[in-house]
Length: 321
Image (cartoon, rainbow, N blue to C red; front, side, top):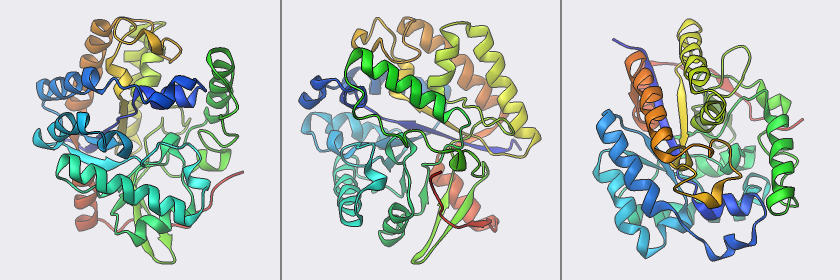
């Protein structure tokens, strides 16, 4: 049998990116879901892959999105909670505000898709002990917010510089993409030890040892320079995960399936220099390699298996610095 792996997709919408880069147009909540989501679902059907879609509550609450989002569950995928408003500072807010955000999103997602989320991923990988305690209180099985990434500081500087050019960098948090302490968090699944229970953590996998990212957007960024280099880098990442016995949790975004000809308004994002057809051919190769090397499943299915067969290490929730 192939070793296990998980596939997830953060369904960040057009307005989320505009907000993140300080563009005032986000306040009208423009969407590309009607273009991106059918393309992604058809792509996963052809690849015979199932994924966990982390859905934003505000998008789920829009009546125009209900039929679109219900297709996620109808086609055999899992839905997760990605907060209600995709506020990047959510993890640092008060307990009451965090709880309200998660509950509002959960209700909207359940009503739109017919499935209640069991897992959560914070916007921009934001996480705190208070947020984890709220998840435990609300009965969540797992969190998938950590991304132990040695390039977090460089990513933050790049984001701030780009935001200052296309919009406004005032909203770029000093904690965006995590701290050096968080870059040293485990890559294998573990349990957060909390005062009110425990939550399983399934980290977004980065390159073992070096902690370099290899999620879909980063690979598309590299592919803008050299698709062959990006493919080779991904194959090396998978081989190193096997060697180090790390079950990879591979992260995608909706923008990974859109090109410059689909969403010219997103030309400031990494990986948007090629047309959509080229990007989808590239993602076909990448996910084909992934599927041949691992038994790919949703995060929820992986967590169920882990709970029944493994005793996970426990970690105290310490963040920052």
